[in-house]
Image 1 (cartoon, protein in one colour):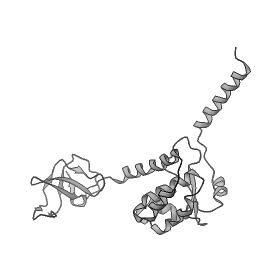
Image 2 (tube, rainbow, N blue to C red):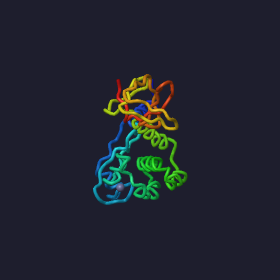
Image 3 (cartoon, protein in one colour):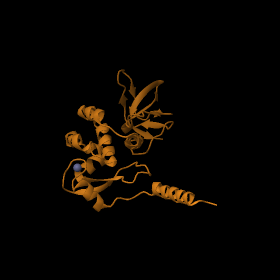
Image 4 (cartoon, protein in one colour):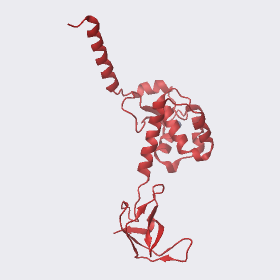
Length: 215
Ligand SMILES: [Zn+2]
């Protein structure tokens, strides 16, 4: 027979179980209150929208932040990034909201070659799980970014064969790789989506993907 205490324990553990698996969707109204109707990254009061932080773990309740269009556009499109806009992170990186900390960390990480973002990153303190969350997004973005495509936009994979669509001077030598040359079993540069490698006339060369067509 169970005593009253054991029954109570069972009930509590069930409640805990349900809570950890229940992802609470924070409403726009709650976000407006939390942010005081300001962009949680740059403080702007215009064109605010809910932004769902990508690569969020399932056991975190509040995975949305309230941000302005300017921040949103620059997060989504790395080519539109104006580093100076993100000096706002100087303030917002101290937010107590983990989802805001995550996006601040990711943007600082993206801009760290500017110098000052690296200084801020060095000052920033994140709980271990928040840091994992922040890094998860970076790994995913990286995997997305390095996709090699030929001149027609066809995805290239290691081991594919391509043909050169124009004569290419090989840097650092007098060699010219002729248009129409087939390059078999290419390999991919994992840092740069524009670079592949392959052998032409027995020589391993780097070729820019814009000048090849998959065969
Ligand atoms: Zn903003």
